[in-house]
Image (cartoon, rainbow, N blue to C red):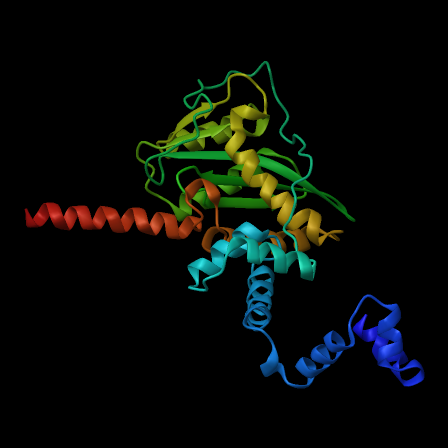
Length: 302
């Protein structure tokens, strides 16, 4: 209404317009005075102006996928005191929203006739330390030059993505290359279990032989539905929501690879994950190893 009065006051005058509109002349003049002198603004308005900038910064720095809850938590981590309801109100006013998950699709091809290892997980996706349980799965992306397939290996303890690869072909080498990256990043595989669904890529001779060579116990879902590998599918669901559906359409493999590399780095080192206490995977693992070092030091002193 203020802008309407500004546009027509020269012709009709402020008071006659206010007599028709539901606004008092004093309200209009007070608003114009605050425009000329921001010092007249209320403390809440001044605070909102500062918070709007901080909220949008956090939202943009985190790939524009955070909703109000995670923006609020990140601000708290940065020492910016603010109520969650305030973040919700200001985000709604600016039209800022988080990513919303869509429907998931199955990628791996099940070979019912192939022999498979026993299910050592039984849908209990918990771990007490890094490198205790890895889960692996595949997904795909439609590009202008054909489908691109992406394989992930994820550490259950922290949800850190320890290996991934992208390829134009859905073949055993794709899953094996992701595993090799994980083994390079984390060569200490004592008492480690590797869990997957019943996809042919994970039941291939080359893949199972590589697990045996690394001293890793294989585990394969026994029921054959999405819950058998729910944690891996959950992380892949975030990937599809936060990267693939938001940044497409995709031209080719190289574009998908670059975007995936960028997302994995952000996911591992910056993304706040609810299952591990709203901290990034790398920070969660650092806390574990720091605690272990402190226990060793304490044991040595005693």
